[in-house]
Amino acid sequence: MTTTLPKTLDELKDVSAPYNPGAEMALLGALLNHNAIFDRVGSYLKPEHFAEAVHAELYRLMARLIGRGHTVTAVTLLPYAEEIPGIEDLGGAAEYLGKLVAQAAPMSAADDYAREIYDLARRRWLMEIGSDLVVEAKTPDADSSVNDIIEETEKRLYEVAEEARFGQGFVAFSDALKESITMAAAAYARDGGLSGLATGLRDLDQKMGGLQPSDLIILAGRPGMGKTALATSIAYHVARTYKPAPVAPGEPPKAEEGGIVAFFSLEMSAEQLATRIVSSEAEISSHQIRRGDITPEEFRRLQKVAREIEQAPLFIDDTGGLTIAQLAARARRIKRQHGLDLIVVDYLQLLSGTSRRAQENRVQELTEITTNLKALAKELNVPILALSQLSRQVESREDKRPQLSDLRESGSIEQDADVVLFIFREEYYLKQKEPPIGSEKYAEWMEQMEQVHGIAEIIIAKQRHGPVGKVEVQFTENFTRFADLEKHVEIPEGM
Image (cartoon, rainbow, N blue to C red):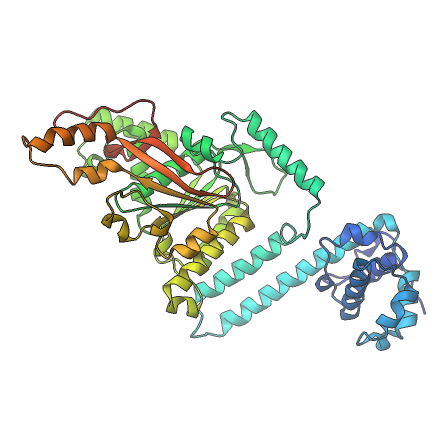
């Protein structure tokens, strides 16, 4: 006996979730009648979205044959369907294919049925995650901590939440072209003509076009060069200039300008980073702030600056010893809850890998870290600015400007990075060569110091989307502040 299938989704609401066999049959029948439907639903609907194993295999066969250019009907599909396990229990291949055709959804409603199947599959996955979580929480395992269970669950939940956005297959060139023109138009209309997030440093933005979504950007330098200060300056500028864009209800926030920033500080505490930002903005030495050696007027200035910057969407995670999996889970969480436009990691060598094999070999471990950071940047469609130490071989050269070969375990870092930036301050090294006051070389040393005082070089050693080169910026050491170099900075007397 053949049952009549409802033709609208509203009529199917009495079918209990998370499985709707009627919708699956209706869509398969519609595909047999109109192969063109697959062009509309095939980009997101996969065999694994079907709850009934026979339906999943039928859809897989149809997808394969349509993909080869064949016309798929109940007649042409029959020889293949006869081999599907379990179809005999449904009356045999010929009878069941006939039933699907008889109960086919109208072509105009096929997308609705496909979406129903897709949504129900995600509900089943949520139930599976919940069931696994209960089992794992009830059964202590020496190899996995509670935090491991939470992180794995968060990862799986995020994959379900984002499944519709990623892994969509090919994008038509016309669509990609529209995206490209839209980006160019936005850059043209935006102050400064940037297609990415502005760093707050004019010359660097002109060279890079801003920080680009999905890019892994490495900022490297020897200790004392100001890596953290520059990263903090960029992060704060992005957060300070944040202007939210209109979004639909329930959607995470998006930025029209600036952005929401997640700063993973594996070395410094959140309080230390906040002190640096306040010091820079209030122009009061962080050393004075920590000692309380400030005047009443300076304290009022600190309070005023704190009120101005406290609303900036800058989130700091100062947990030490994070693994790359933990960092990724926390980044996904903040994007889901608050939105996210930039990730900063300070610094790369303080992260650890997750696999046992990687932990046995530092080069393999760092390869895992950089590969996963690049994948995370693409997954979340945000730039990741990751700081990195340089090897000591820099110090052994006469010219101490960094090179790509100076990156620790440089192979994976250089390979995975879209952009590699080095920071270099000649003044730092020249200070160490100060001759005795009054000696013949002292006047020459003072002249050299005047030329490099307060100047830092940001060297663009690699850039997939643009030119390499360098830019000079102003660095005020007392306030750990980077700014545009408007003119040469005079060296103070007595230096």
